[in-house]
Image 1 (cartoon, rainbow, N blue to C red):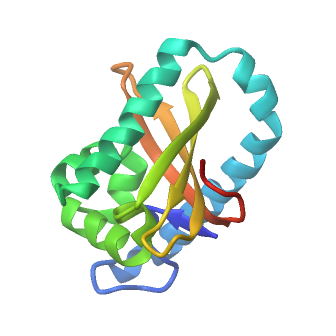
Image 2: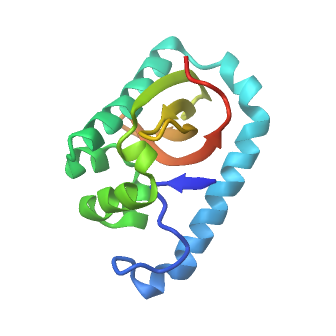
Image 3: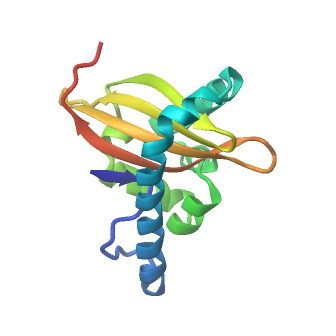
Length: 165
């Protein structure tokens, strides 16, 4: 299982040494958030509007499009403050995605699945087929910002055994 847009626990050249403990705490908080939210998804789906679903879908789609064009600044602009702080820069962000998440960086195809959420939190599932024909499931978490826009707070990618349509 990979956490999109979250640097690996091992230090890399762009990650400051003092941020190690903060990063580990952030990753554990993100994992706990996903676990807790997974149990509430059926309840969340009932209260999420169609307009919000379209907005969430658009943000994830726009980030994927920016990655496809190697537009690091644009792709990074869809990241929430927690991701921006963790990664540090647009250059670091696209380098991380390119190296650790090639299926997200250069998917052969993507299929957007049902968006679920409630109030200011959302989850967008995306089925991804990579260049080698492997299937992946990416679950993006998003948060509504004070200005009402949606930004991506994280993404978990797991290999999927399902076939894409």
